[in-house]
Amino acid sequence: MNVILSIKPEFVEKIFSGEKQYEYRKVLFKQKVDTVYIYASRPISKIVGEFKIDEILCDTPENIWKETKRQSGVTQNFFDKYYKGREKAVALKIKECKEYKEAINPESLIPNFKVPQSFIYVEEKITHQTK
Image (cartoon, rainbow, N blue to C red; front, side, top):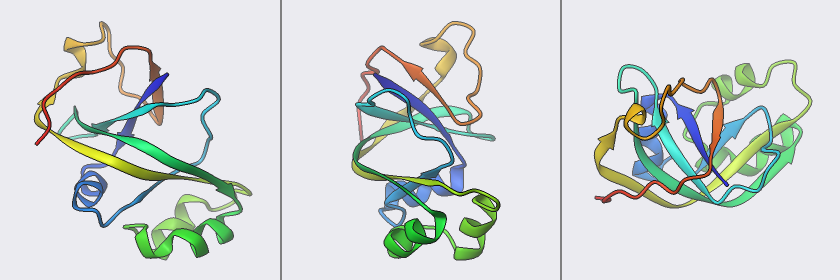
């Protein structure tokens, strides 16, 4: 199974540059995920690349921050606000990240595409040229 993750453009840039090597989520996938497709949210609103998951960390926010902060691409203040009131944090370790030469309009692949608030599962493999 694959997923389309909605990620803010400023974080997408950090993922492609290698500064952000973890993607944080509040909810763990229920299914095994092979490929993560990166949907850059507004104003881009397109699928701009993909990555594989090296490992998934699930622990308290404090422990996740200790383990990932050097490669987080975010400030501790941002991280703390994101997980405020949460007992669990999820960190996806990014590997094999690829930026597409041309961004993909998701409506061209998925009829009636709705922007995921967090993620959506997709069975199809998206094939596209990378940079």
